[in-house]
Image (cartoon, rainbow over all chains, first blue to last red):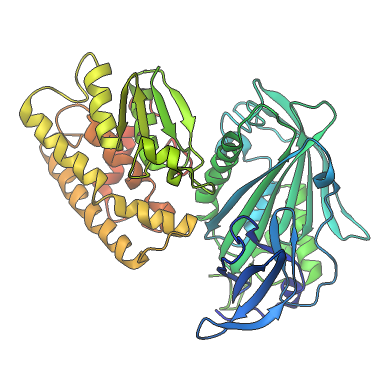
Length: 294
Length: 207
């Protein structure tokens, strides 16, 4: 497909590559919202170009380095990328887990990330375990002026909540969706009392049904090796991948008439409503149209 | 203690993890930062395996590469009953034939998966077609075995041939390869999942 006409999607900032991958002098040929793009570092300065028909550099788009990734936008941003002041805190480790391609709508990937009810079944023995399957009540809201979705006071019993966890614990969670394809969770740190560990996914939608998903962790953990932490995250994310790739329809239905058909999950319903109110169409299921996510 | 150079998403490492679990043998996993770190291409790792591939198994002074070779060793050394790699030459010959197939033709399914998941530059149509051709051969063989009352690739009980062939067949969906046309493979996969000690990996489900 060609570049999307969905200005809501085009006007956001998206992460499009890990800074370590786009090493100085090395290009990343990739795709965003149906547009082939080329990312490269010019010294310390990231640059992103549209790829023209013969693979050369076309129009340049704004680019910046944030949170270990290169970000760009193909439209006119209405707000900056999310603010995560935790990245400035001493003692945290940033673990960039690399990108993984998933044949699914970016919206389904984010919605799955928000959903705690699948923990015991998909992440058995790690993020959940039968028979403890009930999701306790939690709060969810759209926060202004940043226009972000937050779910708070979430909790779940987890046999192995983090790479550093020796035993099960009841993890407290907060979920944050700062723009349709960018989400972070804040989770009880098993090591530092009162602190939150951050785990996030920057979903780079290549097309409506194909994404590169960049995952990171920002944690207090002096004992696990870097590789242990990457593998912990890979195991969890790849457990989700095969489920996500088999969800039908590919596009996420936003119409209210589908809400009764889905499980009664507050943050999921709010996410869909929030997307609908924005007028986002990219990655959605569009009834009676043949241009639905394929 | 047996030491396994391991990556949680590697189907080849999973062959070894799965077998060690089924024979109840303890080991120490040594995680390798395969992706995104590329640790398997570092000089230290290449000293261990000049092919730059995982898994690698260390047991005392012995260092082995290649999942199939590792299975042969572990079955010979740690399966006292010798059911996983029986000692008669004819059975060993048949098993070796399928071990080679597991490390050869079936690896087209791994290549498709690496392409679809982790950006490996391969001719995706070609490797998918080659994986389908391999699965056709395996499905036909398993069908023949079923007609003769056999449930496993070789012999009357599971062998390391089954363990070596299973992972990249079961992971084929990750590379966009459907098992819809291979009913005997799907039935065999269900039987493998019922072997005591069976464990999952991301992309391979318990049922």
